[in-house]
Length: 148
Image (cartoon, rainbow, N blue to C red; front, side):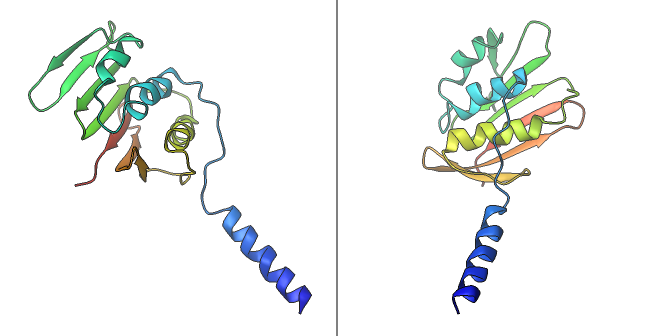
């Protein structure tokens, strides 16, 4: 009976160990660092997102009515923020295949938990639910939004 219990325990432990949690990946990409600082660290309100964006070269932002947008000088990095609803950081296409993993590592640290290995991810930050996505079509778009 002890052997059976040990076998079941090891099987359960093995299954739980691979539930899709993301192992830490060093955050080396400037665009992921910008997303971490601008969106993840200012969530859930994103009230300081514009001030933090300045540290990443986005000096001016424009209120478009539906959102506030801003670009760095060469337009290689941009933000779109809807207060308490959505925060997006975009960049030119990157050749780094670890960007999504870096994003998930940053999200796990910000949320203080593990996150699945692929996006989209639903997670809690500051007691509020968000969906986190990474779209690579036509460039890099890191998106954090509240579900409807």
